[in-house]
Image 1 (spheres, rainbow, N blue to C red):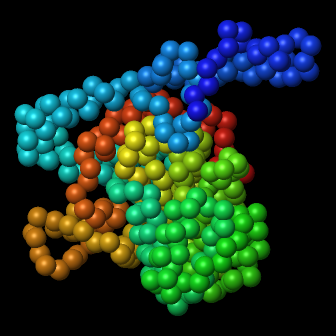
Image 2 (image 1 turned 90 degrees about the vertical axis):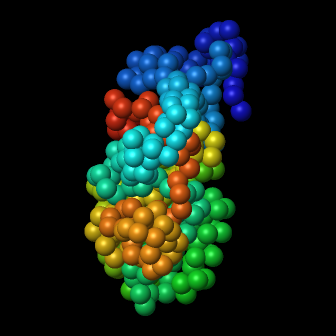
Image 3 (image 1 turned 180 degrees about the horizontal axis):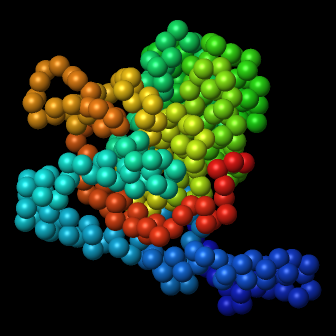
Length: 328
């Protein structure tokens, strides 16, 4: 919930007689000196409110209302169907995906904004199993966000994977034990309950040692800290647009497939916007080259373009300036 600040910068219960006073004063000093301190002015927040719930819904960037208004009145209202070309609506999933990619350490052409986190996770788990035929085991965190577990079990059941629920701190030893039977590990980068950051580079490297793939949920790290997908050799990743990326309620999610896997990636929800020739309207499906094959249906343009405008708040910001590195 939003926290109302007190009149004093130091709460009454933490003043001079309290040993924590120095910590509070130091935190206030560091906040004032932080490189990103001025970024708060880029967001619309009620006066006098300290907002600490970006993990659930990001604040509204100041640029979004006008951008969405222009989309509605000029692009949709005036240009109508012409905006698919004139405003480049058609390429928005890839264009916005590249902007997200910069924040999670992915080179262009590896991230697409499409669908929801749940739908994208389903695509990636099934696609991972198809990239590793004959392997029968998947590892995941027993304490993952519930939708991750629901989707993991549904997808695993369809492709014949046995799920082993292993806490992230035990993942590396469990990976070695599973060996060549392991197809994919699927973990969240940050524990949604505790804020604990797990060892993305180490778990990814361990999976690769046995020939398996690593799939990461970045919902609670994208936009909040450095991730380093390419740097760490991650294979697959998903994340949402409405938390730290500030895309608004119901903002579309994103999916990452490393370039080295894209040509063979066989996603289970093929749709017309992921077709190599979408306007040919052929009865047979041929996947588009590259990350575009992750698209399925017509994108939600209003919410996608709101996310694109929101990402402008990060234009001169590097995730590494937060002080958080890709490693644990």
